[in-house]
Image (tube, rainbow, N blue to C red; front, side):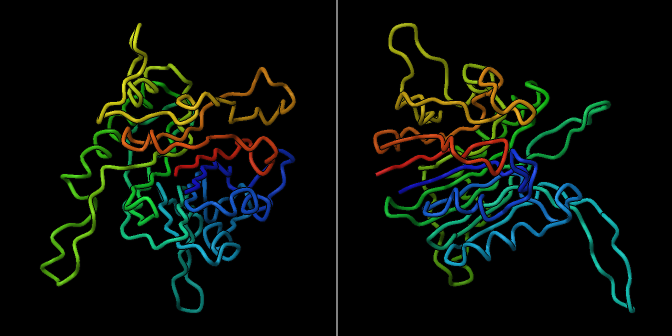
Length: 286
């Protein structure tokens, strides 16, 4: 099973051009796709309907889109009909198999004064896979405050590990003669976390390594796939200095629950992709 995470920066590449086709080509073939910075009516890309464009280019995938917020961008009345025009910005998940359930987890935030800050979220999808039912998360954390990221990570970890007994977005559907959705412990947590390896917010996800035994596999922490396999690479390019490797960072991750660690086959970064200032992170489980 191949999964890929890609922050697509609302379609704008290192050459400052909007090109959704090259973004889709960079993730095509994955069984599960997690995208961040997907927008509608965004003035930065001439108001493209990115979820619709992505669906059109991947017609054989099921999908769900979770905007983190909506802001009015000129809704109006024309010929007696109201036309909604709202800027949406969030995460998207695509799957080769049907998405059984989903919900958008809004993450904690604080009002900023001088630096732009906006609502962040993690889009959760329950998917039936060849490995059994798995939860996939497309995540985007704050870019400007480690304190805020730490709040967001703690909230996300609480929700993710509560899933087996909480049941996600809907339970008790036997009342309506529908089968109860599975409640798997297995999860793949993908996205742009805007955090560095070893930072407090990173340790909140993975746990701290022991001085002698390293990182144990425990039920209430995730495993960093690249670190587990020894294949860490930078994932984000400085758009103003793309050739300066000293400005590159590893802030996009593929995490899995501990029960999936033994199924990790590979994890790599597609360094050829230029459709965004981020690079796709691929992880394969078998």
